[in-house]
Structure formats: C-alpha cells, structure tokens
Image (cartoon, rainbow, N blue to C red; front, side):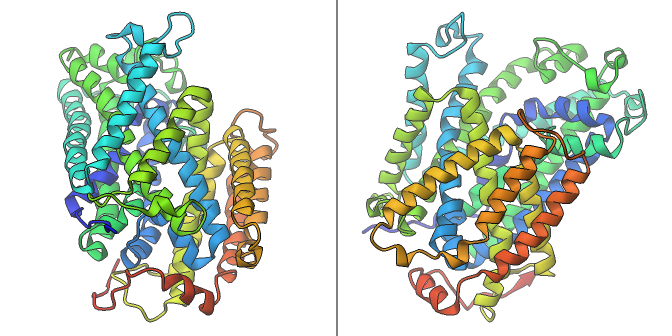
Length: 528
C-alpha cells in the first residue's frame, strides 16, 4: 500500500499555517477590535499573538517528536487512549467538515455584486445555480488535494503570497497617504474602554480567533520533510509573521481614519453598508485598490477552504487509525493521499451545505475546532513522563507551567465562543459518544474509560460557566466580566491537574505507540 509522502518543506509548511491563519477575518478585524478597545486594540493583537504562541509551542514539541497525520486526533491516543482521542478528533473533524461549505459560501457572497444570480433576491440564500457553483468549488478543493501534497503545497503557496501581499500593501498605502497620529489619543485617550475593552477585543473582537489556523501544521505533520525542525519553525514563523501583518494593518487603519468618523466614539465607528476596509480606502482616495481588495476577498476563503479540506482528510485518517472510523479511510492513492477520506468529507460537506443553516454551521465550526486545542497542553506534559528519555528537537521550558497556561488559554477560547456555540458543541459530543459506543459494541473492555473520566467535569464545567457567563446568545450573564475569566483559569488549573494524573499507564502507552514508526532518537535537542 502507498505511504504518505514527506514532500512539504519549511516554506510550504509555513505557508500552510499562514494560509490558515489569514483568511477573510482581516477584512473586518481592524474595525471590530477598535470598537471594543479603541487604539488599545494594538495591545489586544499582541496579547492574542502571545497567547496563541504559548498554545502553539506545546504542539510544537509534540508534533516534532510525533510527526503523524491528523495529530490533533491522533496524539491523544498516546497520552489518554481512545475515548479522549475520539472526543478531540471527533470535534475537530466536525469543525473541519463545516469549513469548506462556510468558505465557499463566504466566497460566493463576495462575488454576489458581480454574479447576482448566485443568490435569491428575497432571502439571500443560494439559488440552484449558486449551489452548483458551490459544489464545484468544494470538488475543486478535493481535486487539488488529490493530486498529492506537493502539488497542494505549491498551489497554496501561490494563494498565500497573495493573501499576505494584499494586507501588507494596503497597510503601507494607508500609512503613506494619511496617518493621523492624534487618532491614537483622541477621543478618550489610548485606551478609552480600559482593560475590559482590551480583553473584550481579544475575545469577542475576534483577535484570538484570527490565529487558530496554525492547527493545520499539526494535521499535516505526517507529510513534512525534516519534521523535527520544520514543524516548530513553521509554527513560530507563521504566528510571528501573521501577528506583524495584523498589527501593521490595525495601526494603519487607526491612523487612516478621518477624525470626523470618531465624533461618536470608537464603539459607534461604522461604515454603513460598506466593509470597513472598503470605506477607509474610499475615504483616503486610493480607489484603484478596491479591485485588489475584492480579489483578496475571494482568495482568502478559497485558500482556507483548500487547506481545511487537506487537513480534514488527515483527521479522518487519524480517526480511522484510532479505530473510530472504518479502516478503508487509511487507504492511500498512488499520490500518497487518503482519497477515501477526501471523498467521505466531501459528501459530509455537501450535507452541511444543503441541510444546515449558514449561521448554525458557522457556530458549530468555531466551537468544534477550538475545543480540540485543549489536548496539546495536557499531552505535552504527559509525554514527558511516558517518553522521559527520548530526545526532543524542541523542549518547552517549565513545561507544566506553560502547559497549564496553554490549557487555560484553550479553555478561554472555548468559553469566548459563547453559550450559543458551546451548547451545539455539547450535542455534537453526545452524538460522537453514541457513535463510539456503537463502534465498540461487544468490546467495551477495550475502551480507555479511566483515562477519560476528566472529560466529564471538564465538559460539564465549561458548559455551566458558559451558560452563566457573559458570552453568546442565551447566556444568563450572572458571572461579571473579569470574574468569569478568573473562574475559567482556576477551573482550568483543577482540570489540567486531574487530566495529567489520568494519563495512560506505561504498558498501554507502549502498546499504542508501537503502531507508529515516527520516533527518531538521533536528532539533536533545541530549546526556546
């Protein structure tokens, strides 16, 4: 049987991560952030980047040592067994399956002014022709991925160059044409809404969610050349590069505003029916750039859909290796691609496109993906005990402290998703558990129950805090802002401690790890 081909180099892997991080969010992020924090949104982007860096380095150590496909779904198998790996892999898989339909619909919305026949005039829903175009693009994502990871990486690199170049060029043009320094201190000073506003921009302002695309590096780790160097380097480089792009665009956006636009304060800054960047471009007078912005508006979601399609095939492959999905999904084509997994995900994507409302799909996407991040900080600590003497190309310092902080960040991201997304995630988890019980019917003794018990208080606790907290429709908002963050952090510390103590025994670990041929004891160790 064909094997996965390690054809992705450092540049290609970095571009996969950058392409996942920079989507269409940069078109709205600068406005949303300043509405919450004013000019101090600059600090929000820095905080968001640092928080995501802490989370990413836990995955950097694991993925460099265990460069396996679908790492977010597969790694928990080695730290906590099949139930935890199912829970994290299932949520990631559900989230990824919604990504292609979401990005295709977003792309078609941007194309609506040029192709009004794509949407119904009364409801705005896709017409029959619009659905046909959407299915074509989803199939196109599959086709590009089916031609091999090397070809996919080249196509993604071209798209990512454009995704990076357009916001950088826009930032430079805005600064060169109009930069009002006084906007950074008036009205209301640099931080008109204080610390609460800065943190609100990180959470509901979309800052933290703008960085979660780094996960694709973990999913594609099984096809990376020199993974012990390329994986951590790509994670670090992509977050630093994207943070610089977001920060530069935010500074340029603030400086380019006409002071008259701020007469009602930052919270009420609005551009009407126009997008914020369209509005600022027209205000400054660089109208010729609107064409490039429209191109970027289409390339962004197209690139994200392409990368997510590839990553999701590796998640399905990993779930098959874990015993949750059929073994057929492990079969690879002559190009070294899990073609059956691509086909299954394509069919599920069609179901989401045709049967689930767009807003519901978006909510499920965000909640499902962010929960899967919680496993990295726990696994990196557990694997220090389970593989204590194995050389690591990256060794996170003060790993328990960093892991605890990263787990708290992951929990906060789930909480910030809002109650209206958390309850949907709960339903998805219940469905996944039912499917797991069906899958293991007659051999329940093979399920790693003891190692997964910490999931019960974790899921119940984050659900309760979300229901009583400040975020999302339907929440009771009984826990004051600020105290909700403190509660989440304290709750995370308790669950993190419990989860680390619930790791697999050495005997079980050896049985599971024997299935993988990825450990290489010859590589040197580097540290941060």
